[in-house]
Length: 193
Image (cartoon, rainbow, N blue to C red; front, side, top):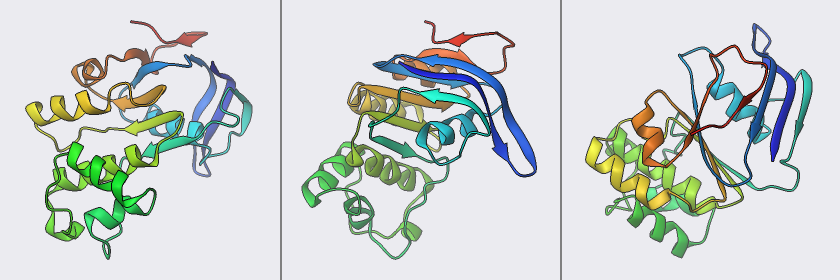
């Protein structure tokens, strides 16, 4: 189990998480929900080890390989879709995940793709990286309802644990995710169905 005990974290200009107590399961999917500014992205960055905690304790992630889909797509503009995914995986795995994300024009550069296509390439890269924990920051932005459902069905259950940040309960439901509300003042926040 991943546990955060009295965790505080943030940025030089603003502390975002203050005294957060949170437990996450070892397996399944958990959706973190809250209005903008409540620390969903900050929490994912802490879990990824990209943002150090200022106070408190985080346990349960030692020796875990974490894959992260950032809120921004972060594609390298000088690489094709296929090469953007190959930087973290084999060519075969890159092609597999691009196909799963319904990207058929694998030799396109990011600037020639729609926003939704760029999002799916970034998602293919996160999936191809693999690991124990998948962190998804607004994974379905820019995707219409039917495409969103197809993509969700292909990523659901691939990683032992998926933690996603969403604004919409329907998106959480697509991955069968339990929901944590960060904006609720609770002594202990734990996943719930």
